[in-house]
Image 1 (cartoon, rainbow, N blue to C red):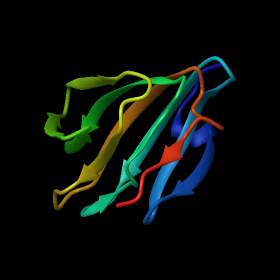
Image 2 (cartoon, rainbow, N blue to C red):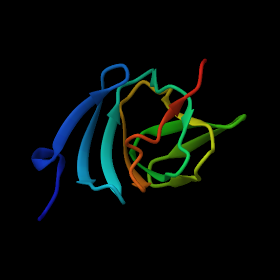
Image 3 (cartoon, rainbow, N blue to C red):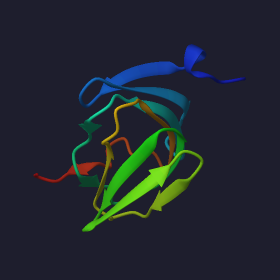
Amino acid sequence: MKKSKENSEHYNWGDNCSGWYLLKTQSLSIIEELMPPKTKEKKHYHNKSQQFFRILKGKATFEIENETIEVESGDGIHIPPKVKHRIRNDQSENLEFIVISEPTTRGDRYDETD
């Protein structure tokens, strides 16, 4: 089946952020996400899941362990299991990206305290 945001399950997360499940299985999750300007998620890690983020539009700021990395449109970043991380949109425009998780992160997310 051909997939797009228009025919995919939608959910809200964080501070007015959106996600669309392009693929939702226990072994693999592919989500298109949108973060409004000046939003961020809680720092967290996954015990089993690895993730790959591909930036479609805007510039993402990642906090990975104690390092800050900016990832621009067209580029991506891999987050191995057990690595503490968060994505932020420090910009004044929407941030759009694809996040691929293997296996799914459902039930495998552990939030850190800020």
